[in-house]
Image (cartoon, rainbow, N blue to C red; front, side, top):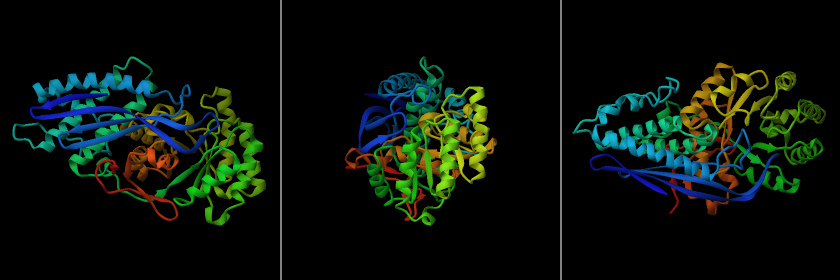
Length: 428
């Protein structure tokens, strides 16, 4: 599905949507689903000789958490491109009439970010191709924002496609200006721990995945479920094969909303008895996504008990946008922010600012996806304590259309690429 636009005389562009099925290396299991293929969506923006790409990672739908699929992305694309056609037409007729709209695309983003993109130059007859491209990309962002406001469906269903469309816009913008996205945001790259996922499966399969992951990082994110007997067996088996000192505070546990407060305290007692707490940096989303007031109170002492053991509690599925964060401060030390949940880079930066205001740590994560998807939010890692940007390691390389991007050091520290935009390239 492809739509073409003309922004200025002689300057045309197009947006294209393609289904992006990804075969996985092995079944990806969590407490609520198991998949061997992911049906993602790829958006491509072409503007003059520049190209930008974005990928929407689409896990199986889960009410209140993951609410977009290929059909939703297609509907959002049609809605957005209709609005973009109207705005591109106005730009073609009189670009100055849109300056207020295109100047406001960073109005809700904290002022410290995108410092060099906030000034919107007036387009003159002798403006360069690059200046006209930048103005056109502002028009794309303005159309994306206005289409979100006018979206007739569930707001949550629009966020995943919006994040991928925005990624394509910023990727293209980085290529126009020859700058990597993290520099466009105003960040300086630094090394952060890069976690690799061990999804919930039979123990031999989990050990095999852990061995594969060790090629890339010593940091592991281990998926567990509601069966505490099974959880204990998994952790004992994984711990038995490593030198504890070498992976001290290098594991995280992801319960994917499967525990009660009582189960969480049982798990902590197990860690204490087995002296395994020294391996664990954090436990992610032990609590259900939706908590009553009474249930919320029950998790307050859980946060304290884990904190006393030097283990942090992070929220994931409970966090979508910045508005979700203040209510979680009492039960979590940090939040896991993902582009598809937040709605893109600008919304993710708002969520990061909200977490910082609550004195919460920031973790960054991705959906299962290709090299493209994994590299998007990686550009915000200078703002995080760690992240699991390993979605591409979960997919079969034959399905992945992209290469390049960040690298990891021998001990698992993520290092950002210096290539422009998102820093990835299409495979031949």
